[in-house]
Length: 313
Ligand code: VAH
Image 1 (cartoon, rainbow, N blue to C red):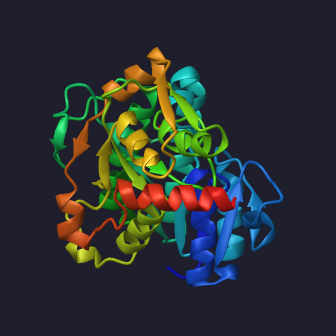
Image 2 (image 1 turned 135 degrees about the horizontal axis):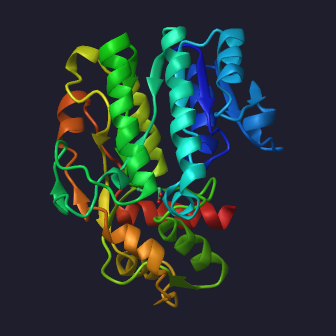
């Protein structure tokens, strides 16, 4: 990767990833794009272009003008928003992805886009979910993610595009809060612990989902993109995870730092239904074997870092 075009640069992953990539590859070598434009360092600290990813001509023009050799496509509507606005989600999540793949194909770029544990459905084995298994998601987001995995494989097989991807679990970050996700409770709980000393979870007690701290997620993408392609048997959509947790597990860990913290529940049936259609804990052995995936943060280490960084913030 030398010159990177990144979409969704102001999103939950993009906000942090843009700055990290600029540190590693050079500020001028990371062209950040997003449909919004804010005063954030992503916009003011290096090359930035406004881009609606459903505008394929504009995406191609930006990529050509900046002569990029890598496309990192992050722009998407997340699971809860996609369930509320399914056709809009289809247009953005699939239309944007096709445009990004076409750009990568035309300019012979390396390509990354994330899939998600949301690509699995109720028929998938819930524990130690295999890398290769049944994929019958029951959400629009899941349909988008499975379709995206297949589309990225197709562009690799038919046009030789160097496409790569991971199935992200819920991602936890202190930099940019997520928007419209099902796993957002695991971010909100830390913000609320600092602000109010209590949190009301919309995901029910005992609901396990895979999660990962953002620093591990970003390192995973870089490690995958720098990996030897000859070793990648599962080129797109590698299962990656750091922990399988439920709301009460996070609360117990927070209470080691804020003993008075309390958690209660007001379950949102829509997001609870989405969460229950996903695995409890996936198997990440393919990523470990094929490109050395390794998560540094477990729940205890992540909680300590989240609370410390949010207190500073
Ligand atoms: C969501 N954070 O909740 C995203 C992610 C695995 C969850 O895809 O929709």
